[in-house]
Image 1 (tube, helix red, strand yellow):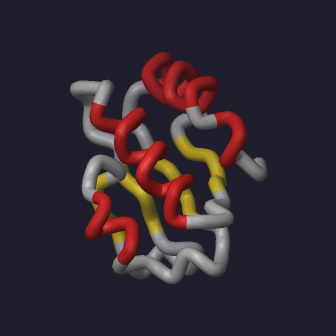
Image 2 (tube, rainbow, N blue to C red):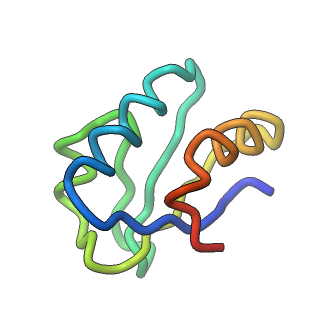
Length: 79
């Protein structure tokens, strides 16, 4: 499990998500729903540059880190 889908409902969700991502030293990428754009999950401006009216894809290279991060942001995970 290196990637999973998240959906944000408001700007506060994004603020919390980036703060959680910032706690991890590993790279955490967020891809647009169509995979055309990739931004750093720790960048609030990067996330706001995506079309957040649709779910986005979180990608983390390390399976264990992905599992831990997914658990921390489970309220935003859709699948």
